[in-house]
Amino acid sequence: MDEKKKVFIVGLDDFNLEKLNHLPESRECEFLPAAKFHEIRGVESFDIPKLLDVADQRIEKAGGIDAIVSYFDFPGTILVPIIAKKYSLPGPSIESVLKCEHKYWSRHEQHKVIPDHIPSFKPFDPFDDNAYEKIGFKPPFWIKPIKSYHSYLAYKINGADDFKESMAEVREHIDYMEKPFFHIIDNYSDPEEFSGMKEKMYAETPIGGHQCTLEGYAFDDEIVVYGIIDSITEEGKSSFARYEYPSSLPQEVQFRMADIAGKVIGQVGLMTSAFNIEFFYNSEANEIYLLEINPRISQSHGDIFEKVHGLSNHHIMLNLALSQRPRPLENEGEFAVAAHFMLRSFKPGIVRNVPAKKKIDALKKKYPDLVIQISVKEGMDLDDLPDYHIDSYSYVLADINLGGEDREDLLEKYKNVVKELAIEIEHK
Image 1: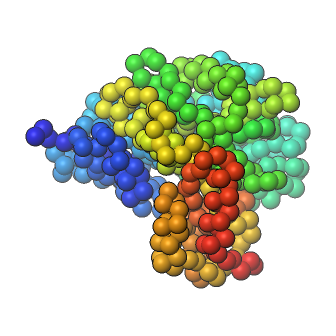
Image 2: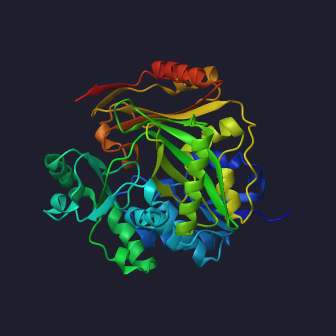
Image 3: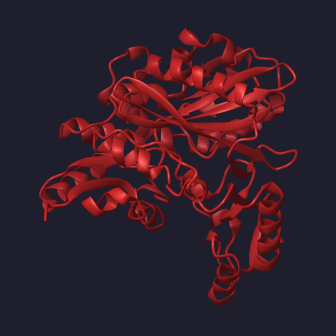
């Protein structure tokens, strides 16, 4: 029997390992951690040199490496091309990934090819006391870090008082992600225009409408779109309620998004890589706007792809890393629609009730397709949740994946599951 291919993963965790082991290609692969999940999430700081050193040690101990992948945002996405380059593996270039990850640089590149599909944007130094005046945008507008995930330190600004209040939070926490990110920019990037920036935040004018995420990949100079997922927010809020697949958008709009995606992926030069691109579609103006590019699959979509197609998007990621063309996703799943729901609290508080394992097991027996990850424990203060369970406005109590015969069936199942879970929060 041939020796299995050693596939190293930045951020290996049990949930995604299960998805990888479901793939037909898994019979030929051994999945190993370049970094474990707990080494890149919920950490006090990101030590990039140490992460790379530990990855090297694990690769040497395993006797080599055949592929490197990650389904997680920073530092996962940027460690992949660094490791790929060192070991001469298939993967995107470091610069192409930075052109996606550095949100101001990304907007700069997008403006060259799709200027009509992006908002106005401007970088600023969060420690500049005159930053609000220098931005010059009429509120409302958004401010965001050059690098972030899960909307961390992203705020909607409705006036000078909002900006001042947000800056207090930004100044306290901005170095958490920007410092290690700019360490990579300084050590692996040439353009001084972006590596030497004091501006660690940027502002952009509002875009809105129907939000969705386009998933695709670039391989052998071909750019392929294989799915569009609706990102549905809580009513009157900016936090996501669920990711629902397939998209309800008209086919014509989806084709236009795919065309825009092809232009911008070609511009940043992202090749031999999966990507997901977040878009807004304003139906009243019939306009499409690009929100951001992520040079990876969205692991949040893995289970819902599996429910509809019988194969998760991990198939795309793995085949690209092995320099193989992914096969098309067919409708071979059990369900016509599926969603990843995020059960949230929009107020701080103490967790007073969490379902016991017996209750979860009973729910899974009642709904065999249910996949659930509960983020909280009884007695926990929601403010103590790890950063990847908190955005600027809410707390994620649980991630719940379900499939349905149609949208009505899907939402009814979710409603029943939440009722039976009976998670209780005593609000402060």
